[in-house]
Structure formats: structure tokens, C-alpha cells
Image 1: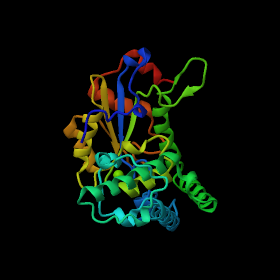
Image 2: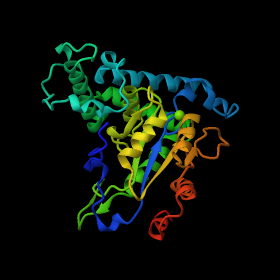
Image 3: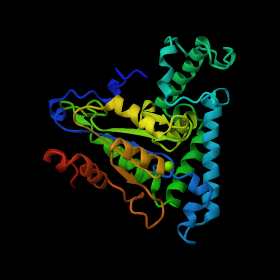
Image 4: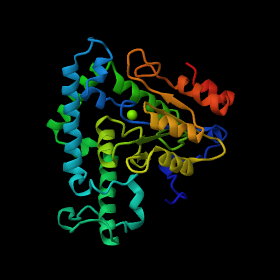
Length: 317
Ligand SMILES: [Mg+2]
């Protein structure tokens, strides 16, 4: 993996004197049962934790609908049947094979793509990855029909309601990370990401393509760019954390892992990074809604020490 030049301008090279002195926080989120709930709805464990207060059957039904939407995006738009056996740990892992060809008139259905064990097929796989990245950047409204959009909006609302706002409050927290990076440019409106300082990264044990579909459908695409999503499916979370450290590390960079699983907990310990454990049970210490940036910052402070006063003030109010 090329560690140079991986921090694209989207990720915010720090250029302003105002932000240069502040630490950069890299928040490494787990997806399932952390930012979203899916498996625990399907197996009834989420409802079960509420001891009869939640309708288990409704949770299972919601989970099945999510599975259908995710599979539809994977199969209809993300080439999943063709490429599911070639899981890569991140979307731009094959950039070296991509010659930058214009894909707007490229015939994906007749390019003879088979097992990508030679340069030609690696390039065809790289084209598919680039096409997925372009769709991710544009968002689902660009390619889903109105009826599907409506059914998906309804599903998001009913899930958010069933989970007491888990999805929307998790999104709000990631949005807070992104919002804090917005710096007014002159008299004009704030420009998203132009002075980007703190970063959201997602590391999931799911395979890459369905995880990208989940990010889109659970509306995380505006707070996590697609090249900040890592699949630990084959390589494990510790390897992903090492890549993330190589990509973002610097003198004032601080990492923090937020997840529900033992694997990310152990990998964070090995990296000497703070770990915030999410627990969906109603008496869980950290869950959504509830988990806030002040709490996460307190975990970071324990490992890295308190930040300069200017940053501490930014978390008040
Ligand atoms: Mg998890």
C-alpha cells in the first residue's frame, strides 16, 4: 500500500494557521451494532435486551427489509455477483491497475471480466471499484428509483423510531466531527471539508461491497468518504488499524476506536489507542442516543493527555 499521497485533499491537508496548532483526532468507528443495528434486530437480541418492551417480530421484519435493500444495491449497482469472491480491504486498493479510462460509455456487461489473476482482469476489477466509488460519491438518489427511495426512507424512519433514535443520533455524532472542520471562508458560506482537521474512518469486519452499500443506505456517506472505509474481513482489524496509522499519523494526531466488539477492543489495546465500548443494552454505559463527543474526548485525554485549552473549549456548550 502506498502510504504517500494517501491523504487526499478531501481528507483535508491542514493549511490554515488557525487549525495548524490543534491536534487532529482520527475517530475509527465500527459499523455493526455500533453506528447501525442490523444483526441484533435479525437475531432478536436487541429486542430481548428490553425484556418485553420491544416487539421482537417487528425488529426481525425491519432487519429483513434492510437486508433486501442492501442486497439490491450490491447486485444491481455494485457488481456484487461478479466480484464478491474478490474482496479487497479498501476501495482504492487496485488504483495501480486503473489507467483512468472514461467509464461513462464502458460496457461492464461485455468486457469478459473473469478471475482477476492477471493485469487485464485486475484492471477490470479496478474499473468496477471506481464505478462504485463514483456512485457512492453521488449518493443513492442518483441511481435508485422514486419508489425504492420512498420505501427506504420509510424503513429508515421506522428503524430510527424502533431503536429510539439510534441511527439519527449516531449520524449526528459523526456529523459533529465533520461540522467542526468547517471553517468560514471570507464572507462566504462555510465550506465542508476544506479545512478538514478531524476524521471519521470506518473499519468493519463485513466484506467491502455490502459495507459500502450499508454506509449509503444508513446515510453515513455524507460523514464517511468511501476511501475511509476498511473491510477487515480477511486481514483483521489490527492490520486495518496499522494502515490507518500509517496513512494519518503525525506529531499531533490522536486515534480513538469506538466499537462493540472484542476484536477492535484488543486491536486498539495493541496500538495503545483509547477504546470506547458501545453496548446496545438499555443499561449499557455507551450507546445511542447518549454517546457524545465530550465522553469520547475524555477517553482520548486519558491516553494522550488533555488537549490545549482552545480545543477543550470547543467541546463545551
Ligand atoms: Mg460491531
